[in-house]
Length: 83
Image 1 (cartoon, rainbow, N blue to C red):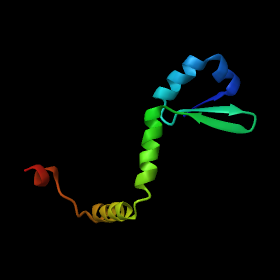
Image 2 (tube, rainbow, N blue to C red):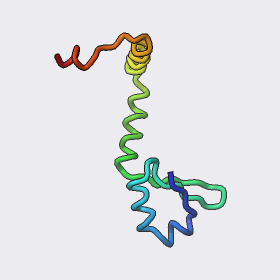
Image 3 (cartoon, one colour):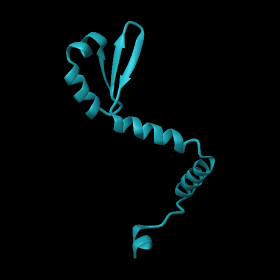
């Protein structure tokens, strides 16, 4: 994640926008003791979708069970799945 001052962001807006669209996690813009994050719409949508999924208790249970099965070695090979 790239970090710039608010003054730098103001003076180099196009560069900061480009960084926000390519830098994972966006760009942190700092001003005094405040920090803001500029991210792309796609990144925001992904965060919203993830937050929504994390509120589904059934999904979280499924993920936990899948992790436990994987750690035990209870997995299928690609050959078993696709023949």
